[in-house]
Amino acid sequence: MPDAPSFRILDAALNRATEGLRVVEDYARFVLDDAHLSRHLKELRHELAAAASEAIPLADRHAMRDTPGDVGTAIATDSEAARTDARHVCRANCERVKQSLRTLEEFGKCLDLPPADGSVAPESFALQMESLRYRFYGIEAALTRTSQPTLEGVRLCVLVDGRDSLEEFDSLIGELTAAGVGMIQLRDKQLDDRSLLIRASLLARGGSVPRSGPRPVTIINDRPDIAAIAKADGVHLGQDDLPLAEARRILGPGKLIGVSTHSIEQARAAVLAGADYLGAGPTFPSRTKSFDEFPGLDYLRQVAADIRLPTFAIGGIDATNIDAVLNTGIGRVAISSAVTGAVDPAAAVRAFQAQLAARATDI
Image (cartoon, rainbow, N blue to C red; front, side, top):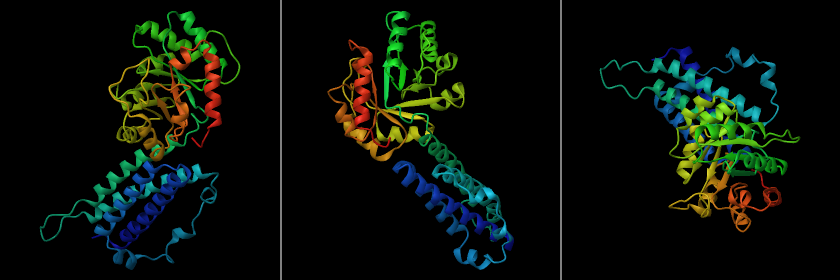
């Protein structure tokens, strides 16, 4: 049984943890409007409360509480009184939650002594706190990725192959960049590694001709090794490609990792696994890739209602059906043949950008 000071520590840490979780949950709910992360935070908060009520009866906590005699209530720092924005509030409370869970874990070990009567001990409170702490680490990372500004304003991704020649590829990249495309993804399963690397490096440099203005985000499909060597901005992974964690080890921090998803379960898993953005589809039949099933517009509606991580609808999207896609609430699209197969790819980009801008929502 903990001594009186340990009881006070457990009580204070539990208060800090639950208060911090509520603040972070409100951030996910009202600032990010993210049902998926809000749900995970609420579940974690309730699990914490349930574990605490089992291990530390509320009456005991209240009996040992001495707020007037707590010397810490009079100690404050300048940083505690200042928050620059909602994101700063979230970060500060994430730190509060992690530290409090660690305190609960350490002092909770005082609750985990074997019963004197030799009966079976209940589940370790300290181990429960450790598990909650590790789960929160993943949620915190997902919150950071969801609110990061890297893809802010990027609504159109154009998927390109290596073209028939390097010169043709370079020309296409130049046209797309000049037209103001937000993201270009190089996807070509037929190229040998050397040819793929040459094109990936050219893409990452923005083409052979220096151009003024914003540079598109550059993504390499499937190959984190090629993306790392070429110094591209990131990689896009399919469900059967290298695991996200392994791709992150190759790319390191500061690079984007996108994940293709075909169900809401896959999308939710990708968010918590560390994806920086999602591809959702296939939406319609495509001329560049064949699929057995099409989750379609219903799946896009599910993602739009549940997840705020940047998500690009993908699969057969063109000028005839983009409005139907945008009506689902998804505000980003990945397009291939409707741009690369157009007589004037740059004009096609500008037309799609105009449609996306006209329907822009808080994405």
